[in-house]
Image (tube, rainbow, N blue to C red; front, side):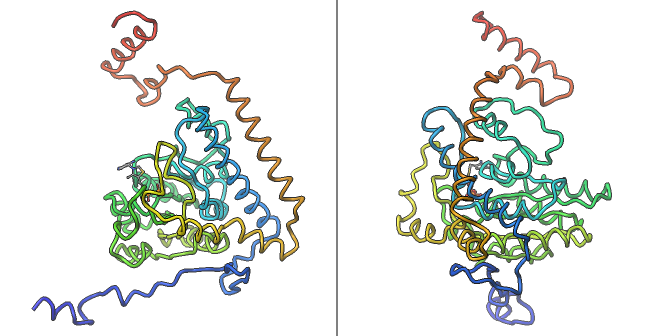
Amino acid sequence: MTQMLLERKDISFREDELEFQQLQVLKENGEINHDWDPGLSDDKLRDIYSWMVKMRILDGRSIKLNRQGRLGFYAPMGGQEAAMIASIAALNRDDYALPSYRDVAVSLYHGLPLTSFFQGSRGEMGGSWPDVNVLPPQIIIAAQVTQCAGVAWGLKLKGEKKVAICYFGDGATSQGDFHEGLNFAAVHKVPAIFFCQNNLYAISVPLTKQTASDTLAQKAVAYGMPGVQVDGNDALAVYRAVHDAAERARRGEGPTLIEAVTYRHGPHTMAGDDPSRYRKEEELDEWQQRDPIHRLRTYLEKKGIWSDEDQQRVEEEMKQEISNAMDRLGAMGKSNVLEIFDLVYSETPEHLKEQRQELEQILKGGKS
Ligand SMILES: Cc1ncc(C[n+]2csc(CCOP(=O)(O)OP(=O)(O)O)c2C)c(N)n1
């Protein structure tokens, strides 16, 4: 009986009726799909490309600094630069970004100083940056999805024409917070953009173990919002999708889910993950051939707006920026561990005051 009901197309809603095509604007051979070209100025293209190059350099340097014990937590972002930079570049400086631990490039492009990223990695207090609309990187998988719905709801209640974008991975789509956040956002038509970087793995768990759906984008349909899958290694497709989602949000038409299909070149984090245990070398090779930086560079060179000298200048600039930031960090000294008690409550509760005193005693070398 059940079988018959589910076979009736007029009653049941089936996956094969959902047709999803991945949006690609800049093809791998350098050709452009003019229908969806976001029409960026030469300056904007150079800006996006330069940032992608800089972030690749920062990625390599952060991995080395971690190995030397000079940085703490680091989740490599190499391979995902187009998804990160082109998405945030499509928004305004006063829009809100809610990144995950991996999205260092998003936070920096949106205004976070490099020293602040280094401080965070070393578990130091990063200071506060009131003019930078980036929330602290979220470690709890998918918690930023509900927070993004909340931030966007706040923007709507205040009547502001800003949007909130959150970044999460394919693994996050299995969390309850993902579903709660998307549902709430769609019901209340809030100006949110849910930006999923599908890099095919959640640590060692492949996408096939994460979902039985053909795409992650199609999950949007059930919540009543548009969902679009883009080639996440194509900066122009990413830009176009986020730009259009933001326009829609600013018009008061509600949230959008974007799935950017990409690949992380490095390990999950620097805390001992060995990707060769769960993915094949050939797979990595294949994705490295589809490098997002290489693809955009070919396009810029074809347009005659990028040269070897430009490349060298940007690379040198970034190396210098990193070295300056590390010097500043060294000069700052370590933060006081007791500060962890100060920044959660406006008035510290009694039990935390006691714990603070206890720790102070321990640090002074006395017994508690
Ligand atoms: C609620 C929660 N459960 C588990 C973890 C442990 N954890 C850290 S990263 C990660 C995988 C996340 O994968 P994905 O969402 O695809 O993002 P990616 O790391 O690939 O960017 C897990 C399970 C966590 N941080 N939070």
